[in-house]
Image 1 (spheres, rainbow, N blue to C red):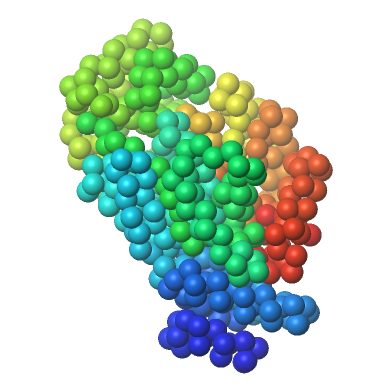
Image 2 (tube, rainbow, N blue to C red):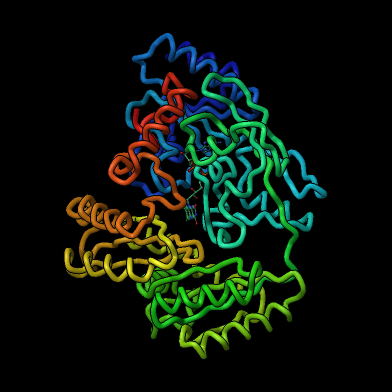
Length: 477
Ligand SMILES: Cc1cc2nc3c(=O)[nH]c(=O)nc-3n(C[C@H](O)[C@H](O)[C@H](O)COP(=O)(O)OP(=O)(O)OC[C@H]3O[C@@H](n4cnc5c(N)ncnc54)[C@H](O)[C@@H]3O)c2cc1C
């Protein structure tokens, strides 16, 4: 191993192969559920360096198949399924892309931007905005997650209802393969039917097939106005009706539709008392709606008012406020984005990032809430998420007063099976946007078709025959 480490130091410089000191920022996952041990954290600064690191590791692994040496790609380490941190063997290298973070180019006429994998999402958004464009991917971790990690997980976030997930925002990739070769696929093409679209294999593969080193992403013109409304709804059925009305009334202007349950909002109030949360005490759910308008704020407001009047008349809305300023808009989004942070402060919980046909969501929640409440007295159901694209964060928190660790030990397996079986019976998916990582890898055989799993294993074998890339994540061989 010492020879290997020396070779790695020659490639990236000795200051960028970290083996000593506190490495917990790289070895511990964001939710502090997993504490791994790395052979080294390796921090290359260019595609060439990434390729040479992978090549050296592949060659070592081929010579020492029992060494357990493997590579875990890491961006911002904000992933929620324990996919970006090493296991406890001490034989895995964390390949951190954070130093490879340049914005390479922006093609205004082609509405594209080419960025390196370690570029922080917020940096990308800000650069696009300065040039008059929108890069619509948006999530609460945007200040620390990277575009490489977003692509690795096919991240979703709050704008999927209009712009799709990261896959839909990517037109080309540059990838270092598991053999250390570079695939130069940074096309800005919207049409290219020259065979299999390799880009889609790597997007969402969570570092198990290769290392994404750069991407060409889509840009959109900045809207003239982005207006938000905070709406109290009497039931989830009413929220779904409101969503349908919003689609019809706002068309492509509907760029966000988030639901937040009362318990989720009460946790925000408890842990972030400075945030003022409107209308939530007297209704089971609130909705945060966003209308992006290419004409003007005045036009956006008129459209919103028309929609809300219609919705009030039809009984899908109990009360509503429309933001009066950009500051108010930001404050409303901050409430929504504080939910995962408030939950983390409340203690460990059992997270479910699930998707369902939107039409099935109210019944799914009724049935599953009842099952959980009868299985565990006093359990707190922290339900929020991106209703506009059928994605719920259906999280289960310990009853008040019960130790989180004790709750997880006693109930995690039972709760997961109950929720995932229910998801399956409603035709949903057990991972909507966070991925599989190591947290859900053992659940897949129960919920995914055997044919799909076999194809996934075949792809993994074909692209990474040494099982060098993030082994044991996504699919087990
Ligand atoms: C507060 C909070 C809110 C969040 N909200 C959302 C949300 O709304 N929607 C959503 O989808 N996610 C959300 N997440 C999850 C997380 O932010 C995303 O999964 C994000 O895309 C991860 O980016 P990262 O750079 O931190 O990746 P990491 O956590 O470092 O890595 C994630 C996975 O991608 C792989 N990977 C990383 N970089 C590369 C690369 N260059 N090439 C190949 N594979 C790579 C890793 O091996 C790992 O498997 C949230 C997380 C937090 C903490």
